[in-house]
Image 1: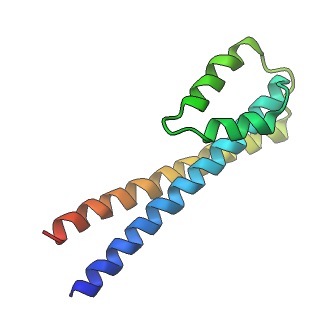
Image 2 (image 1 turned 60 degrees about the horizontal axis):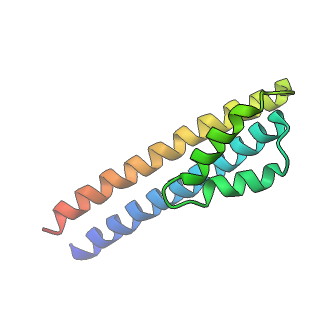
Length: 111
């Protein structure tokens, strides 16, 4: 019985971690497309900068700083990619939520 609880715990942790990694990658891609469309220098730097913060301070700084730069060129293909990455981010959020719910259930199972 204990083994099945541990397996359930490990699966819930794995689902949550996969979701978190997916969200991080998708935010990087969204920022990369947005920075290129706005003509910012070093869009890859901005993508990495936004995901490398403990409390999303990099993303907040990017969102504040980008207001000075209007969107210059955003092709239809890039709009489609942007929408795709937004949808996949939603799937990542669902993974994190399911993992968190599973971890909550696990905490009650071990009591």
